[in-house]
Amino acid sequence: MALNILIVDDSPVMRIFLRKVVELTGLPVGEYCEAGDGEAALAALRNRWMDLVLTDINMPRMNGEEFVRQLKRDEMLCDIPVIVVSTDASRERMDRLIKLGAKGYICKPFLPETLRDEVEKILGVQYV
Amino acid sequence: MKELVIGVGDGGVSRDADTMLITYALGSCVALMLHDPVARVAGMVHYMLPESPESHPEQNTRPCKFADTAIPFLLRAALAQGADKRRLVVFAAGGAQVMNDNSIFNVGKRNCLALRKALWKFGLVAHAEDIGGTTVRTVRMEVGTGRVWLQSPAGKRWEMSARAVRTAAPREESPWR
Amino acid sequence: MSEIELKPLLAPAVADVLEMMFFSEVLGPGEPDSNANELEAHVAFAGETSGKVGIRISEPSARCLAASFLGESEDALTGAQIAQVVCELTNMLCGCIVSRMASRGSFNLDSPEFIRPHNENSTQISATQQSFEIEHGTLTVSLSLSASS
Image 1 (cartoon, rainbow over the protein chains, first blue to last red):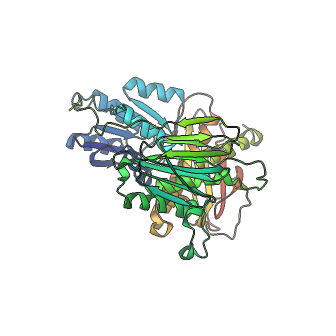
Image 2 (cartoon, each protein chain N blue to C red):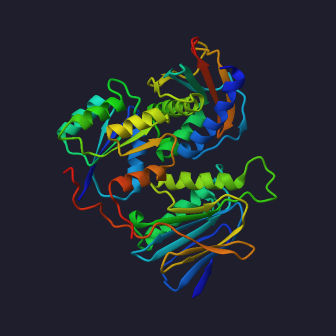
Image 3 (cartoon, chains in turn cyan, red, brown):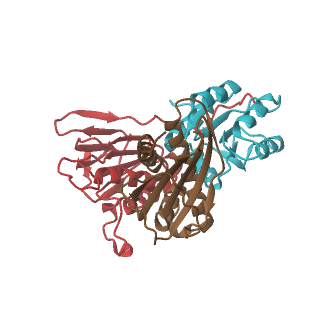
């Protein structure tokens, strides 16, 4: 079954980087969707089903924390797994996002394989 | 088991399951190894420096000497033998800071960075690495199984473990669908 | 915080960001070159401490780092992509530096602001700054704190 992945970051080049990391997993991806802020991300989620969301925090219009808060309040969308990828390495922010329901939190800068492993873990890839 | 020795600045690919690829005395050099467990193709390259000379990129008759030409060379050779990039298991070893490397530019570290840069260009990252430090390494890779062993000058031997074969798909039913 | 306390924050952040995301490294101390064709970007931050992190980077270095980041050949890059990578580099450096500076509490970063290639009219930031020699040129990182910090 092909997966749909939503990448949310206000930097177009960071969205390219994140897409390349997801491709490292070798998982079958049906569609990559992109959004530059939380509002656009919510709109995208209401148009098409996503199996995983990668989101930044610091974005204009609606930041990643508010985006995750609204996502988790939505009955239709609340079970979609979210991985936060952010420059904010503060314990406070991390704890808030995990409490809001984020499944993972990766701090920039990161090694590509670190995020690759997190994506695989959250999507339930098994190794034998 | 037959041995195919990969020399300094050389590379090779094999589909013979009875062959062991070997390269000796990895100091600041790096050995990159690829294995496709389905096609049973294995390749190894032993490169010395991070970048090929800018002045004569077309005339580089020793592509395996430099990371930026060695890695594409090895990938193309493996794919030509039937390997699938999506199945490749990637190992890397070497890049040590050798005792007589007094240069300001730490060649071992630069070789390791060049490895990551070149792999990233192809959408790859090593699944297992044994790099850096000061140990000179000898590397052996079994073509049939893809298993890799390292050995130090003192004779200590250890196996590199990448993750085992991964199931191709995530779990069948995502509860949120 | 004084310059003595701030300056040591810069080098480790530069090393980490360059190595992990750009597969590159600091080659040694650098000297800013006012005659060079440089690209510039700033990121403002606010939280327990507020201020701005800026970078100036030689154009050939920016092109090289952008190629590494995107996994592309240098000649395949557009000017817009290089500018975006310079912005993202500034963003990550800012996050890295501020994380080391703030002992607790989260912070917010504004969107990076790209300055047209360095010229006499660009903002001169009076700040803690350090230059680094990197592949094909120089990277200068500056950190300035708001008066109330």
